[in-house]
Amino acid sequence: MARIQILELPEGADDERPPFIIVVDEWDYESIEGHDLLAAHWDAFGQKVGARGVLFAECTIDIPANEITLGPDGYPIKLRFEGDFQQLREQVRDEVTQAQASLANALRTSRRT
Image (cartoon, rainbow, N blue to C red; front, side, top):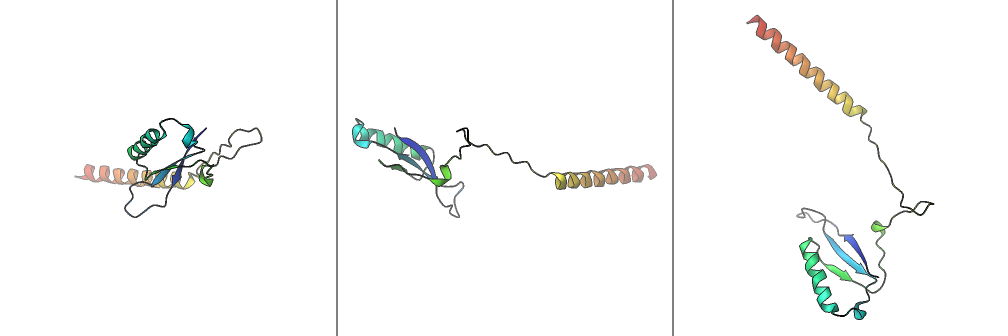
């Protein structure tokens, strides 16, 4: 059965988003009736979603970026990243302190006038 993959291409200076091609491998092209029509539909789909092209191959094409690491239980490994927000907290605290000082100064100035 055919597989569908995405192969990201190197970005150019004028690219708004990373360019890519759609790879359809393990494609038994000759056994599918109307294969030319089906290929034309894939090409139209590729253009519609912004792909630079569609590549058909009978063999298996392994794209390392698309590999999924499986754990010992056979399920994909999920990674969780947690940011260190200490620096953000300090920055927010400093901004709040400055805003409070500015407000207090404005209130003192307005009471004097």
